[in-house]
Image (cartoon, helix red, strand yellow):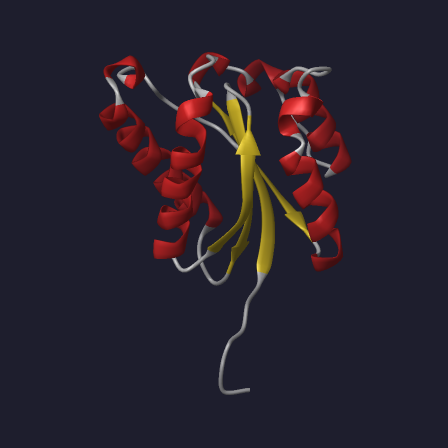
Length: 149
């Protein structure tokens, strides 16, 4: 085969530092638009983004790129962008870690709906509870001593 074709679907989750409620409703769509641009510039594609005031979920289709580098670029760039939007975001930071879970093409509709329903979902469940459940669902072991700092 003369070309290499890659499509990897990744459900990415990360929170604001100390899970502070810093993502205001009026900035959310602009933030996700900015993140979409960062992802596109890295030769990947944002399928959907949503979240709450303290964390976000992204469903991203990536090719031959390093997922850790992509997430680092998203977090670094969007954190700087947020700080420029308004003085009230001067102390905006993302948490150090993240969750990145691979999904199959057949799961796109289900994961998309899950991400779309984040605000409703979190009226009943905290971010910590949700993240624990995601790790169990995707078979990822976590050490909670290092997960929430």
